[in-house]
Image 1 (tube, one colour):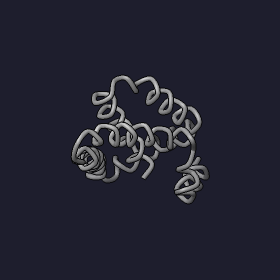
Image 2 (tube, helix red, strand yellow):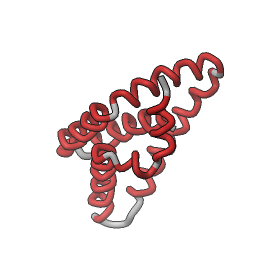
Image 3 (tube, rainbow, N blue to C red):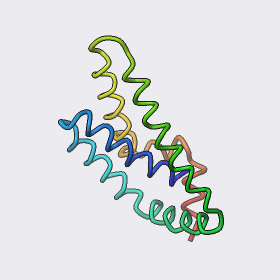
Length: 120
């Protein structure tokens, strides 16, 4: 889950910044904050992910699925009729990264974070 979240954040960043370059600084600042605050968890995730993929290489397919899911979600949100679509998509993008930076995912998925925190 953590590796998928990390990959999805990078894909989302690329997709959102390409659509809304004026929000790049805000998005990058929030992404950087998340990466800084959760540096230990993300470092552990990379280490354990690499070990898992060595044992079961097809796990790496999960990242491709996450990428497709991110892009489909953005397409769905973009499919709203009229000019409201761009506003909704920009808010969706901005909120995603604001949520990462806020640390809300620790509250929403506490077991995942507790598991990662316990790992060496």
